[in-house]
Length: 440
Image (tube, rainbow, N blue to C red; front, side):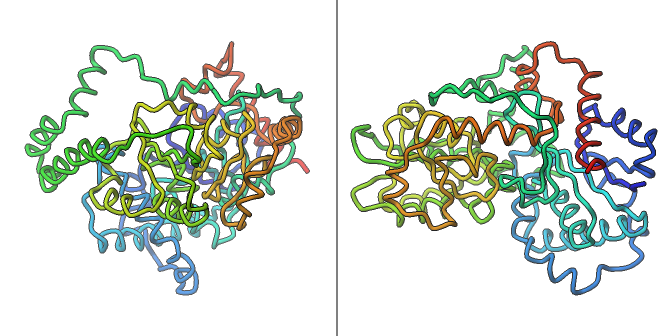
């Protein structure tokens, strides 16, 4: 039987799954995570009996920059406010988390880690990395855009390749309408209650938030600093916009909302989106421009003054007006470029090629997708014709390697499943995990 650490954000479906596997005598001890590591019993100082061996720690230090990027979003204020740590605070936390997980795993003989999402908060990255160096099997569950399906794989860096996945639930042929436009409700404006509108007004008003933070000892230290950043961002996101001509030769690059899993987890070094744009600028000819559009939900985080000063220095780059229609940009560009975004999927399903920079892109192996790190040829990228029938075939093959159910319960995924019931969802998830882990 497996001793399991079940890392989750407490979505509600976990307990029946755990009960099922314990009843089946496949799981013995199961430790369910709290929301944050600081709330864990094993986080207490007396729990650390020994330090992680030097050779293992040396391997983990490669993840320090990614850890800092992820951890900086876990502010007590919100995930879109900076945490009030300096470099040395992050260094200390990095060491504490490593030794905390090392002692927890070894003391309890953990041999299976279940992650209900890929790591993107910092401490969850350490949970995964320490498990990997200790050779603890790790099962990743990640909701997909296929209705009622989620990806299952055994290695963090396998997302997009899915070489550790296997056929779980054979799929009927996937039919994809050949067009760019998609209905993505998570990009729509939310319908808010009066209470939610009041909360949103409070959250989006820099002056009110600053005054509120000044009354809290824990937040007042950087309240004025955050207020200043928000005002500068509001000014800069309009200041550097330029008029565009859709008849020009251009590449369309849509900036990701940050901080988010799409770049902090799956972007690798291209969590620095400007690095991708700098390299894209060198990749394309001098007579081609890069039209860049900001994400409509972006806040001030990761968009400081130096971001815009650096952006200005990128040759061929034009920051388009925020109201520019995304699909007009996709339709008229030579090709789309993104770190790991849905716009790449929109592009290839409409017949347009995409150049991706992130290593973790769920449609990475599909026709029409070119990965920058593979050193693609510019002219081949332009000339490539997407075989839509082959795209549907490969989407079907990938869907067959997904589990049934909803493991990330938000309205967008529920809306894709008419007649959804929690009871059936539990049965689907349990059957899929059992087949993946315990059936040859």
